[in-house]
Length: 83
View (cartoon, rainbow, N blue to C red):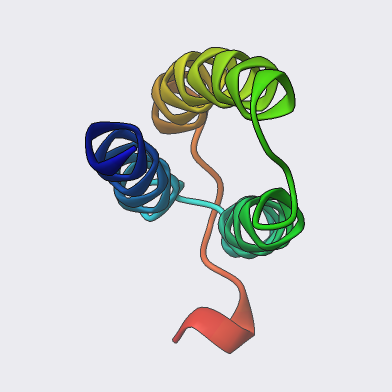
């Protein structure tokens, strides 16, 4: 269980780190909030459900990485809130 817990924590941190790379404030905040909410919901899961959610989270991490690259290719000016 300890290695499973460590894997979950590492995945959570990796997703948060990667989401910080979004250049758009709105995308960044949305991703961070979704990650936090999803992992909070996952606290009540056990067994097979945890493994399914881990697979979804790994896939989501790959999606976030791709979206960050796309966002960097097509950047937009900063919002007033970001200045």
